[in-house]
Image 1: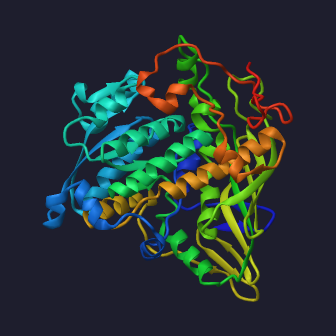
Image 2: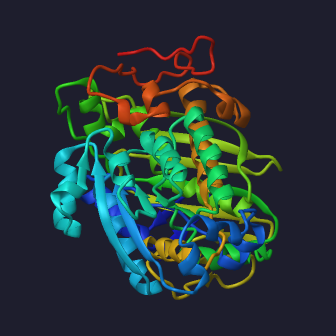
Image 3: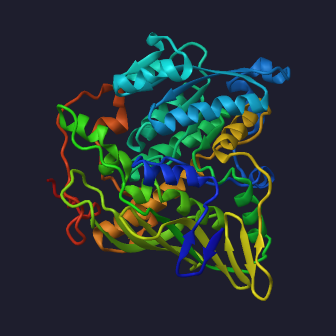
Length: 467
């Protein structure tokens, strides 16, 4: 159950997210989960994706029109914990939908990770690719039509762009970028995917979770009245994992410890808290227009890396509604991964609780599948049944929202949506935004952990001191 108040929410048994959160806290592993999805009916009403006839021209043209069941040939790019999990979720989802599916290749920057494809999926060694160009070699395998993207987020834009160029349907983990230039790449590639009729789902699994879908439908129907405020938490009860410094070059040490470098993870407000931010954006059917906040590097101390371990950010939507956001990766006696909505008639926990003033609280628990599997079910059904599905804009909006909050805290200033969207500052190496396959192991700068009033990517030139 969940004990809720406006000021705090102690989540005793978070739905579905528990396994990821528990793994993060108890096993000291990073979480890479995902967010909620509008009901199919609502999504189809609101979606402006390309017509289904365009989709038929791109993939499975003859077999789909003939109502045959296509074979999905998938590749997994990034074979860490979330990539391996997403591959298994895809195979389970295919069985549910009733289509033939297989994983035909995997790719990871590191050879030892890529070799896991043999034990996980029974692949031959020559189908387990490693290196910076591994993703291209996997994507170019004959017959590939489905890609699962789960490398560190800094690589997501260039990998997604490559998938769209090849006409592949895509499942991609969140977040989908770490800065403004990466988000602009995502928006552009998402529009191209729409023109090609490609189907795209994101790892914001709450958007595919039955309890969220039904509760948010009730909120939209006005059960708690007009929305006046939000509260969003991703508060761990312990610190995030840290893998130390392993490798012979700057780039290798950073990528092996990727969570602690802004160009790779976006910091935990982007990499993790994007889930809760996405729920609020989903309910509002919009993104905030400005943010201001604060945070600190409180317990990471002198460990290697650039990121902070806690943020408190206030976001404002264009209608004046505020979202109060807090995320932390520090040792504490309480923890909560949750969202709350305040309305003129009551409050709601979007995961499945409605409280109307003067009435008994109503728990909403419709039957539904594991949302980690359901997001692949929805994607596969969109492919074989020619349904519209392109979540690129939603997940990029939420990613950019989190980035805006991060930069507001880093700089100590109020940041506008257009400021971050138009920002030219790139946190990563230039090739990450152009063609990461051409990257080689070598030197790359490390930033000092951001200090408000000193760190500011909007200055000309930007003020981002290096370590």
